[in-house]
Image (tube, rainbow over all chains, first blue to last red; front, side, top):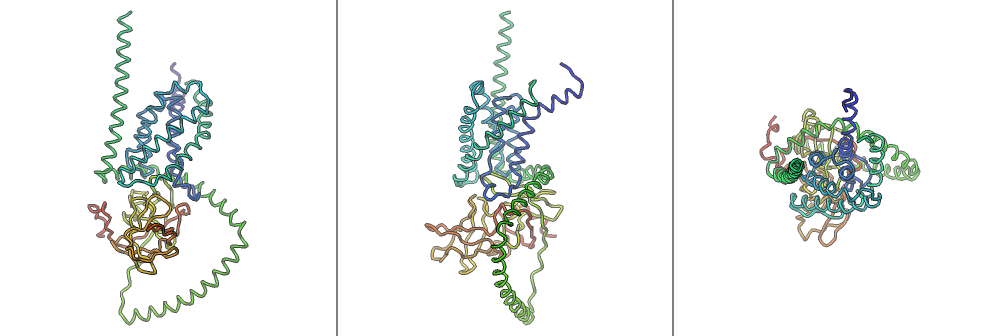
Length: 171
Length: 291
């Protein structure tokens, strides 16, 4: 299947979509919202993306890419370097290895599983950051962040499904 | 045929092993990065700064709609409370007129006294005002990205204020962007005094909205409503900059409500008071100060 240059370019852009979307979410997380109290508990949007693509298209967002995205996230957000890399890497690896479980399962199952994954991810992040900073961080904000992240899952996952159906059908 | 499938199987096993190995080495790499971040702050900082500089124009564009939306919401909100606001402002204006009179008198008196003492005034600080382009979300770090860097004269350790109120200090500087460490961040420690009693303390962030006062001597009478200002100790900030008011005193934990909240910041002012600062991480980076 060797199309023209344009066709191959088109193919490439479609294949880069998951990574591009995740990068966009990293930047979106860093955008000032000016909502009172929102910034401190802003949802971890890239985590949703890493999880979603690990189930449905792990070939387009492999673990090495998840690692890289985590690194970019750390640099932009200002968390200690390597923390998000490890978290995204583990989320991608664990989810992708269990992806058979999700096939044919309903949206609610995926959402519920995401709750577990997000809880593990945020707990790990909390422990790592606390060790690196040398203080135990206040867990309250982390709990609220967890709730926010889980409640943003349906919206983002709907967007991803739409994207996948519209642009990546042949894959 | 059998041999063939055997080779294939071996190949598959090898591939799986390679994948496992790659995964494990990335896990190791993450831990190595965390250690590196602890040990070699300068290298890590350079990396951070390079990336923030690269994404700064993008973030700048992305932060504009957010500002516009906030403005519209604010306008609607203001419209609803116009009458009450008017009454309050008239009241406040009357009070302020009185204060203005007092201030004029004090100003005259001050000038007269200074002339008698041959007082040499502090040099006027230089400052720049800049846009906030990134408010890094999340429960772990309280910092912001601003749209100016070394090319605009921003240096590490400078005070960042909004209006007259201290909001943080410059932690990292790139060419065209810089990171502001907010007062509420867990790594922020600022020497302060209570304006009334002159009791000294350190304002310590803990990633909550209300930072704590630590090292406050136990016999100090701190009560809610007391104003907290910088003490000028340590040479990072000039003395007397307002920060916030004490919001609660519970079981010996004194919390301070900052006068300016993070979400209100759209433009901030970076002020160069020409103070050296004694930020521990800055010990080797004392260049750029002697000009």
